[in-house]
Image 1 (cartoon, rainbow, N blue to C red):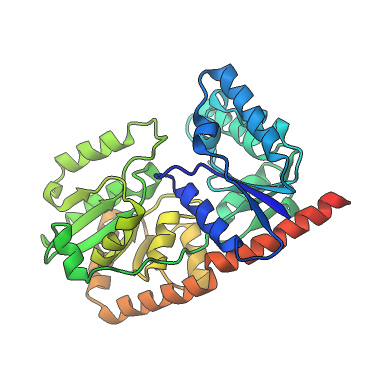
Image 2 (cartoon, rainbow, N blue to C red; image 1 turned 60 degrees about the horizontal axis):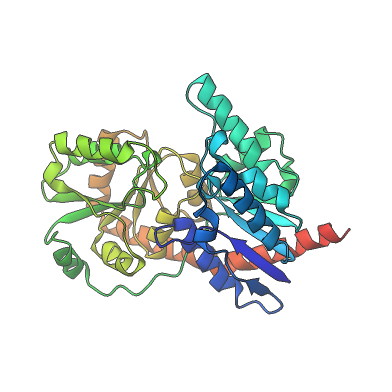
Length: 370
């Protein structure tokens, strides 16, 4: 079986890291020939609408040498959510091989009537094309949005976000804190891209109710494709807050520095408003860190499968602050959460996930041969 994985693989791309981890896990399976990833500059290096349209058609045609294509879909891969920017149809129209699409984000229509209509059009462009053999999602929320679009449920596979293998922690907690200038502090960490759905403002306001020795580490930077003013607004809010000296934005975290951040973190916060399955949260679970998370459906799914998150509700600053204080003062619960994350990781590893993908590839190929 010749397989091509398609994903942006830039250094700052979470989906690129996911694709490489999946590729590594798949490489141990005999009978599977992994064709090269399409280089990122071949995907987003075009100039002008017409040139991009032709570029995406050429890329799609090149992929047809595979027996099966596994696309790691994100809207930005094809120009963004806005329908007028998207070249996804040009890409899909050139595909002839069976294709599995992992939808790493499915935007639910929201906002003004015009914005809702644009998102519905974009979702139809991205997820309903006849060349898509199967769709794969990581949360029930995304599954529901797709079925609401009249996509048959039999075409949608739901598997939770896999957990990567952690790198060894090179430092003790205190040494890591010293290296980050946080010696003797209690460190709460919100890991991942600075994006509106992550709930940063909730965490910042919650910090004002916590002790002066408690600091908040926003371990990430803006998404490379972010065209909004969110990060600027976030920094302005921090500058005006009473906790300005206790909030630290690291910027993009290279892979080699992730163990340092995890070692320094006493508690991981996930006050998310929505998520389609978080790579940042998966990393926290990979390192066995206790996680305090908002009461959203995706987090409840993780609880049902392994109980490795502490949930707080409602998603308000005062409630988050109280829950954080309670958990930080409850060492047995912190240890129990850490042990639960390790059990969850063993069940939902990338290797286990790769085995499920192999079965899905074989099913897709069998259906395509009839």
